[in-house]
Image (cartoon, rainbow, N blue to C red):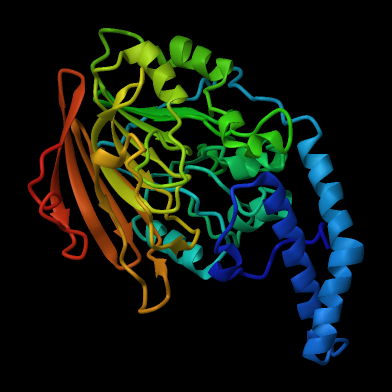
Length: 428
C-alpha cells in the first residue's frame, strides 16, 4: 500500500493534534494506511462488524504497521539526505518581474494536506489569476512521493500554478522523508514557465523575484531543520537552528548581491520557519535572521512572511538577538486544521510585539479556525498585501519605500479581527 498513489481526499480530523516529532509523523502515516486498509475491506464486505474492524486494526498494529513504520523510519531517518541543490548554468535563481501593470503573487504555507479545505484555498487563490504562486513548505504527513504527487503533480493536483511561475520552499515535513521526493519529483515540475508553456524546473530550494523597487527572497530554512542524530532532535535544547545552508549564503552574496550598500530596494523575505513567536510551545528561529543581518545589518526593516505555526498572526516591528529588524507575518494557516485556544507566553520575545491573531471559529463548537492565503500585489514602487480566507480579504496592507527601509499602513481590517491596537489606519 505504501507505493499506491494518494487519491482519496483527507479530512482535517486526520491532522488534528499532529505532532512535530519526526517519529510520530512516520508512525501516524502508517496508522492511516492501516485505517485505509480497513475501509477497503469494509467496502468489499470482508469486514462486516465493528469488532472485526477493531481486530483488523489491532492486527495491523501489532504485526504489520509497527514493522512497516520502523522500516520506513529507519530508511528515511538513518539514510543520507538528498543532496543540497544549487543553481547551475544560465539559471541563477534570480528572476525579473517584467509585467507592465500589476504583478500578483499568491502565497500559502503549510498547505499541502490534500483536504477539502486546502483544495478550497487553492481554488480561491487560482481565481485571483496570480502570475506566480509560492508554497512556503510542509507536505503532510512526511513529504513522501505519493503526498507530493497528490498535492502538486499531475493535471488533477490542487496546487495552482501561476501563469508565469510557481515555486516551493522546503519545510521540515518534506525533510522527514530526507527531502528526496521534494528534490527529485517536485522541483523539476515547477519554476519559471517557458515559452513552450512548460515549467522549466526550480533549480534549488530558494529563489529571488525582483523589479527595480522590490526583491522577494524565498529562502530555505527546512534543510537544516532536522538533526543529524535521530530522536535527539526531539529534545528542545538539541533541536536544529534551521540555518541557511552555505550554498544559499554564497548565492545571496554572489548572485543576489544582498550586501550591496547601493541597493535600496525593499525586501520581502519568505521562509517556512518563523523568526519570532508569541505562543507557548513554539520556537523562535533567530539564526537565519542573524545570517540576513550579516548582509543588510540589523536596522533596515523588512517584511517577513513565514509559516510553520498553524495560525494567522501579525507582529509589530521587531529585532531579536543579532537578527534583522522585521515585520513578522505568520501565514501557516494554508491547509492544516487551525486548532484554536492559542496560549500566549511572556517568555517569547514576540509576545509584546503581537498585534493580531485570528481566533475566529468556523462553526460553534468546532474548535477550528479558518484556512487562508496571501496575495502580494506589486505595481512599480507600490506593494499591497492582502490576507485572505475563503470568503475574501481580511486585512490589507500598503507598503512603500523610504531610503531602502519599508514603511507600511493598514488600509482594511475585517470587523471580526479589529481591535483598538489593530484597525484601518494603523501605521507600521
